[in-house]
Length: 47
Image (cartoon, rainbow, N blue to C red; front, side):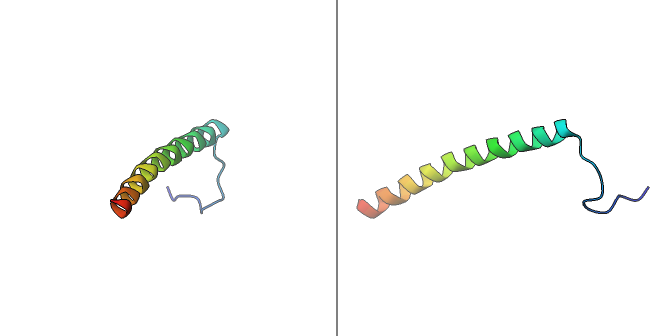
C-alpha cells in the first residue's frame, strides 16, 4: 500500500497534542543544556 503524499493526510488531534508537548519538553531540555554550556564557556573566558 503506497504512502499518501506529504500533507494530504489527517493527523489525529490527540497525536498532534502529544507531538506538541514532546517538542516543548525537548526544547526545555535543550535550553537547560545550553545554559550549562554557556556557563562553562564564560568561566573559561574569565578564568
